[in-house]
Image (cartoon, rainbow, N blue to C red):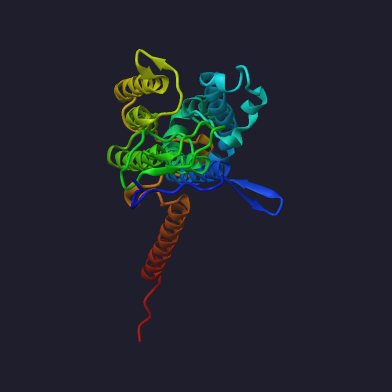
Length: 327
């Protein structure tokens, strides 16, 4: 039966500008990284950090994250590359898809730690600043799976079903399936908004905003993973990523509880070098969009006002001291 409504898949995941191929999967990853760095930078400055610090540390975190994501995928799906009839060189073809978020976050955190250590910045504060940006990046990156027609869910006839083209080489059977890439994309947007709200409401610090992002993401990943039909290793009847979600969720919740008891509140100084420059944390009543330049402008205006008041006071004292001339 033909469906009246469904989500079409692109006929190709590559667009050619002359001889230059633009791959949809890579394009989504690049846009996601840009959004994460841009928004993370805004949050970092709003907390009293320097402009450009997030981007500088991302130079370490992003390459580590890409390598970690690819390693996790290749290790957990090794049969796609290292069994009979497979070409191990394909393990390096990252543009064909295959990045595991667990490995990306783990090695990305290692890269961020190196960058933070070089700048004398606490990693938990940096993680809190970039947490919602990472969720937004994941939401964008998942559309790369749409371009590659991969990681879809069980067959369905729902109006928002994803139409998949048949491809024997890729192991695809033509039909309509749950668009799990879309479910995860929307879930990640919700996670980002949750972290932003909770951070403003409860002034999360010392890595707790990042832990909230991790815990919330794993909840969604668990049920979305249950819908997927791509090949995966199973342990006690559950997909490997389901178990990973459970373990990571418990670790994130434990960190939230322990951290709240040991280090309540939020860091007063997130970047010592910025504090030495005289930068002060920005009040968050106006949201993340407030920048240090607003505070600097305000301080300059107050100083000028103070100087004017001092001049008026000095003039009044001089007038009182001058002898009065009789007419």
